[in-house]
Structures are given as C-alpha cells and as structure tokens.
Image 1 (tube, rainbow, N blue to C red):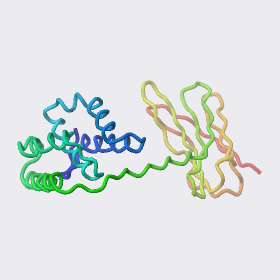
Image 2: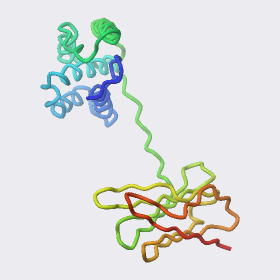
Image 3: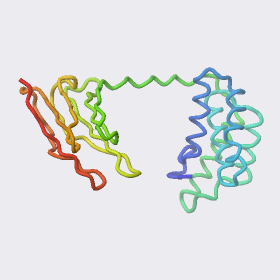
Length: 222
C-alpha cells in the first residue's frame, strides 16, 4: 500500500476503495448493492490489519460525501477512529495532521447527512485516429496517429524483445496521419513515406529497444 500524505485518500488502498464504490454507483447500482459488492471484492483487505482500517474509513468518508452512509459502515469507521487503529503509518507532524483529519471526519459522520446524490458518469475517452502495420516477424508494429485536435501526427514504433515490450516515437510531422504510409521490409526495416510539404519535427534514422536496432528509411511523396 502506498501512502503519500495524511489525507483521507492519500494512499492507494483508500483511493481504490473510493473509485470502486463510485464506479458501481455510476453503473446504476444502489448504495446497498455497491457496498455488498465491495465487502466481497475487498474481503482479504478488510481482514488485513493494515488495509482493513483504511477500507472502512475510505468507504465511510465516500458514503458520507454522497449522502448514503450505511449504519454498518459507520459502526466500523467509528471503531477505527476511536481505537486509533488507522494511525500506525504516520509519525510526527503527519501523525497529528492525520489525527485531526479523522476527528473532523468523525464529526461529519455523526452529523446531519447531505442529500443522496450520484457521481457524474465518466465520459469515455475519444478513440485516437490511427492506422498500424505489423512487422513481418510478428514482434512489433508501427502506428501512425494524431491526437484529437492536434495539427501534427506521430509514428510510434513498438517492439517485443525477449520478455519485454515497449517503444517510442520515431517520426513527428505536421500533416494528417493518413497521409503517411508505413511499410515493413526484411531485416526488419521500417519504411515511412510522407508528403513533401510536411513540416517535420522528428525523424529518427533508427529505433533502439532492449539491444535491438530497427533501421528507418524515409521517402517523400509527391
């Protein structure tokens, strides 16, 4: 579990619990259904002496924020706060800060609850316009793409070497991504053809990944 501050959601477990619960609400589940699903999905973490307290505090804080605090969750969160079982990860000033944050949360949990609401649905990311060509050995591909709204395109070269897979940008030019043609030749060598009038920002002559070098040859299209 990564902890990077004293805030209620300043660790990986707490933020994951929050997102898991909210995502289930976004999918149309009731708070009761979402909580029941979390209790099953997070059962091993709940039983853990380190992650268990984090789970209850994170879930209670999230439910309180969205006006759907359940009595069972409240009971467990108050027990965590009152027994200081959530404070073992901090020391010094951060410990005192965390203690104060939990005291504020305790007051909120026992106070008047806000009106129930649902989180906003997350908009799906727009697909990135692209086309790709697989290498003849089946261990890589070249992808030409343009980010939505961008005036330039890129060619990204990806390779698989032994058990590693990765890559990087090899060509950037101000033109449409579908104006650029890519072709793999034996070797393998990647051929890239682009419009003669395109303004080129990056033009790598080779791509190096994990000890393997892929030559790149460029051609102008009239």
